Image 1: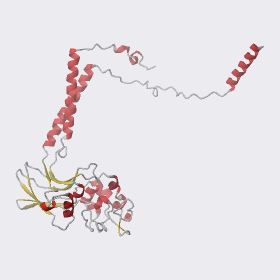
Image 2: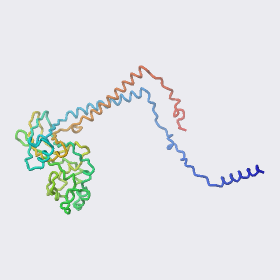
Image 3: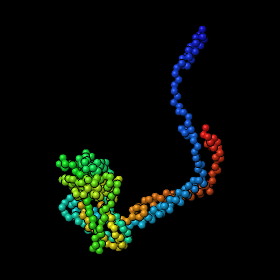
Image 4: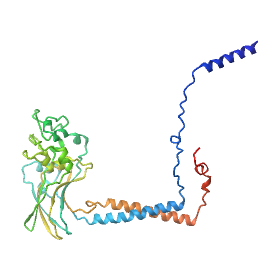
Length: 353
């Protein structure tokens, strides 16, 4: 009796399972692509292949490094740091004295003499370099209005420019923001043998910035008219698209030490020439212990003076050459017998299944 009951109950369960809807499987449809079974190159890194690869990298990288290093060494560069020497001695004692001097009405004229150690071919690029100036600070970078810089109709778009947005709380500043407000305002004039060397300031900024980021019909208004002056003033009769010192400054630097192009000298300078520099030391870097440097530099086909690229190529190439020699010695002294590659799975079953 119990046996029949068990049989009938199991049959009922089986019929119930067959009538229940089948669950959809989450197993993906088979594909050689999804299962990574497509034909592929699977190289076997034998000692000969590894040594050859390292030698190839060293043969390519070392000459490139040598050429890059020589190109960088051909660049003639003169760097003159002046932020301390251009302050009268009675104001050099401490930071507060320096700040009081730079904010006072004392004469800021400073005379410097630079000796040219090697012939410099035109064009000679004039840069100013600032150290410990964090143009990449988030609040500083955001304190500008790109819409205002591009369009005259957007002069009142100053919501992102605080605290340099309005004069007296009602009149908008053009250009607004901390970046424009802190525009570098030291100036340089150069003479050689009592003859002035002209500094060309045309096309020192990016062409894309002049054409697309600064409007031809946008003129400075109420700029540096507040109680606290941050930097240089702008000519209100010249549109922003032609204010190239401003355009160069508004392209913020990523690092706290940076150079920005001041102008170009379109004359050759001979070795042992004495260049007399008359500068106005007006920019306040003393409140944050910043440094100011005047840089004269030529260029090569690789750009300015920068040994890093050449040293990097030489380092990688030399390291690869060392590894190639080390592996060669190990391979010759203690060779290791390789297995038969025909036993590898992809060789035994090329189809992958």
